[in-house]
Figure 1: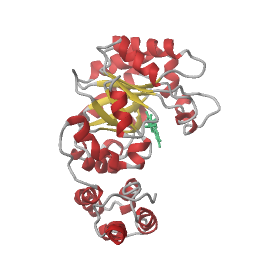
Figure 2 (figure 1 turned 90 degrees about the vertical axis):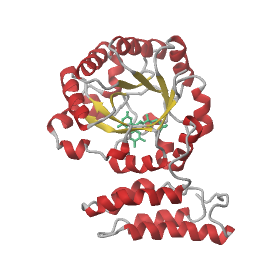
Figure 3 (figure 1 turned 60 degrees about the vertical axis):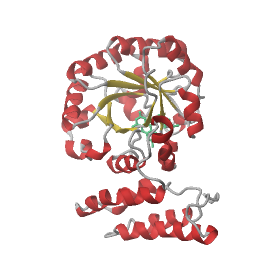
Length: 338
Ligand SMILES: Cc1cc2nc3c(=O)[nH]c(=O)nc-3n(C[C@H](O)[C@H](O)[C@H](O)COP(=O)(O)O)c2cc1C
């Protein structure tokens, strides 16, 4: 049986390199994804800024947005040279900007073209080439739409398919609404795996707890978490032990902050602002006493010019003190505070 796996979703403006380096201190095994980068940006843009990442982030996949096979091949080669472990194609983003560029979710309507894109990327790199898609768009029949897309990408050599288990509605919904309103249909993704046992399939959409992750892994090979992993990153602490039988890199959120400090210190020394990193840590300690004070302190203080690690330490101390006041022991079970 193949190893079950766990990934953190590509999320624009969220899963930047600082976020990924932070998630990596919580799990050695979770595969991390970049934000979507368009082929135009990869080919013509400031590459180091768009694609640069820290070696600690491995295993890390880059997600490309595009629909021109030659450009995708070129962009894939550039990303391979940067050292990414996987190239992923976005067939799920519904934003207007993306639709105008004729890529993202609207590619669900053009499976043959997606096949050409995957084939071109496969020919360009030796890395795994994967696809992240929806179960369909608009009035498509998800049985047929997902099968046709899958047939096309499998024939082209796609190594893994992650399916966001809901449709995208291309008219009238914002990208945010398109992550909540079209109903989830996990069974459709389970059926896909059943029909093609040889294809590696991961499921995504609305999954919030490790218990749910285990439930899905009875039906598919992998689970991708987006918002839950970002908003409450402590969930990542369970991944290495529960899915890979390994000791997590750190014992708790306090140790995670300490483990992330050297990375932050290096970026601060390069002139990066503290808040560029701490903005991804606001969900840490959620549910513990002092969590709100921690968030407030970071939100107001970390944005100030010149803010350094002591600002973060002050925020963490608010949690430690609040916990001690309540329990006399910071490892005591958390009380719901939000
Ligand atoms: C802020 C934000 C940005 C996102 N950006 C991308 C993206 O760049 N590429 C992509 O394929 N999906 C993107 N998504 C969708 C997620 O990858 C994921 O499919 C979706 O959030 C459903 O999973 P979840 O319920 O676990 O969050 C984004 C989601 C969020 C919340």
